Image (cartoon, rainbow, N blue to C red; front, side):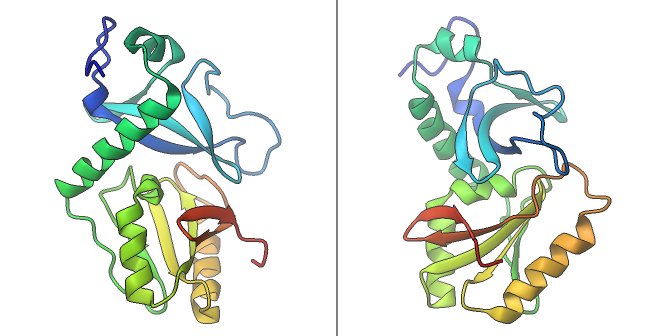
Length: 190
C-alpha cells in the first residue's frame, strides 16, 4: 500500500472519527456533512468518518482523496485504526475509576474513536471480569463505560448523559452501546 497518494493524502496520518448520522434531536442529515466524505456504518446512529489533524483542527477525508490513493474503505479503516493505536500510544490514555463507571480520557477529540481499539476493550473485559461492556458516547470527547451487569454503572452513565447533553459540545447520541464478543451493538435495555 502506497503511504501517500498523488493527491498528497498521507495514509499514516489518517484517524477514524465517529460522527452521528443525524444531529441530536432531528431526523435529517448533519448540516454541512458532505456526502462525498469517506464514511461507513459503525453502530446505531454513529458512522465512521476519517480525518487528518491540521493545526488545531481536523480535515475530513473525501472520496476523491481515497480514490487518489487507490485503496478500499476497508483498507483505509484498517490503516486508520492502526494509526489510532499509535496515536494513543504516544499520549496518555487514562481510564480512572469514577464511582461505578470508567471514563476514557485522551485529550478531548478522539475519545469516542477509542471504541475502535480492541486492546482497550479487551483490557476492560479483564478488569471487569466479564465480556459484556456498556458504554455511552454523548459527545465526541466523552466516552465512559461499565460492566454491563452493573445497575449502578448503568444509572451513572445515564446521569452523565443527562448532565452533558443540554450544552454538550459536538453532541453525538444519548444511546447506550453494549460490546459483546468484540462487537458493538445498540443496547436495547437502556
